Length: 127
Image (tube, rainbow, N blue to C red; front, side, top):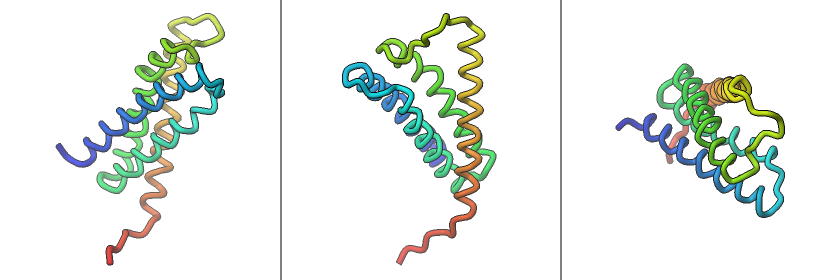
């Protein structure tokens, strides 16, 4: 298994764990659930940054979108089951699909930004 695949799997596990812990903290400690999106964005970015260094911009954008998709599907389902991920409005298939598409688009944008930063940073020189 190559490094990019390992990074993607690690990112997927991280975002699901983050959603689980975040939703639990939101429900039992009163942390505002919406604020937790910032941590998800950080995970999308970190994964995409690492993959950009290994595989380039297109792979980084795809990785950001993939991690966001996992966040918007499995992560949302976990948060919904715990409690704070439940929408306050009537849930329709269009709402679910629309939410997933928006989150995936946001993940792709974070992936592109992370790739841009990875390209602009000089390579690390180990002393």
